[in-house]
Length: 228
Image (cartoon, rainbow, N blue to C red; front, side, top):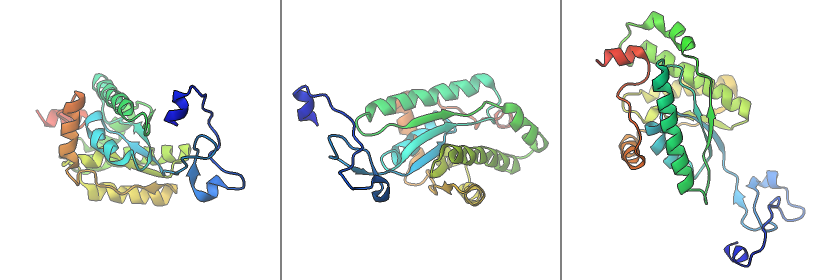
């Protein structure tokens, strides 16, 4: 391809198939130059992104193997300024990551509705719960359910979440919720505990590399005040 560009030829995207070959049956994606450089089709994943720092190592670990889209849906971040600061931090990382890997793949982005009132209504009866308790379980369930719903709406094959990269998040609970939603929604849960293989440590390294804002509380005001 590089040689053709050097000769000034205009390249045209093709279906990537030679005559009488069914791309879908072979699980192939489009190539260029009349069927050259065909590649296996990558499974599509909608990855719930809680923030930029947590997303870094999760994206790094999966982007080469999956057609990845991040989904920013976090009604638990009840402070509006904090919510948009985390969103902008995520987008800063994603722009930089995509630029670095533009010749290999691109990670997509979808933003959900900002509806903190929905979280507050559900979580307020559990205001006195300790961190890691029933309020957190509710928060996991709310965000994962919305991610599974959106994955189904977008026709994605899998859904997952970056929340598991945190050493403070119980992956057994996240996995149980994910598998239950898989059964309910008909979209597969991508079962990866991102804190493993030094996932959290790597997220700290990458956050420094990209100059990302790293918050010191999970998201909701209940956790924020408990940390003080």
